Image (cartoon, rainbow, N blue to C red; front, side, top):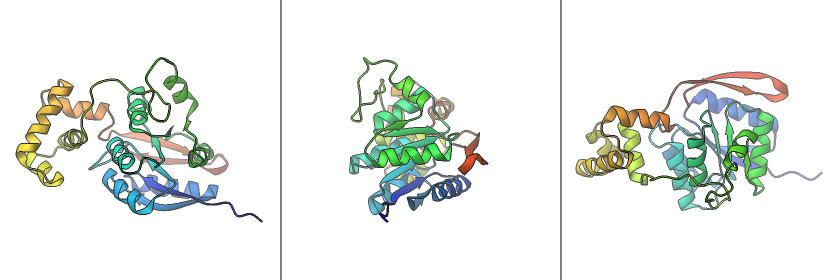
Length: 241
């Protein structure tokens, strides 16, 4: 009998219960090997370099470094990496930003285990895979510029990697001194990046930056998740991303 190669998967999700649920669902489907679990985007970047998984299953809203910035860093270091988003955020803004970053798949957390398993197999085989509703929206405007995976690019003025990190930490409530320590830069540099963020976004107070970060899926907001397990069994998972 021919043994099918197991697809190695790195789970990137900050909620323990959600990670446990995903591990159980994928193990039940078979032909997957969960090689690691990352709680933050920063951990995901390091673990991808060390483990070289076939597929990285990526959340968007996470502490320290969100899924968008983690994806950018992962693909900058390893352009061949295959990142798939599994998120409660499926609005156009989230999808377009992640597509522009280079992801090859995007599913909502309300999806079934069978569809999730199919997506991972498709992506591991070199294809892109998006839920039907998302794919329809992405290709609604054929005249838009495409990214390296042939998917529509988002428009607009984007923050640099460092500016995005500063924005996330500001929105999470960190003071300039704490941000400087976290990122290993000077307070003066933090202030410079913070001002650049405000200028680019045309937002000039911390409350406004926080609202923007929530709306953009950079920091967490509460949702209730329903994932369909094997053979239609429902698993209710509470999470914030």
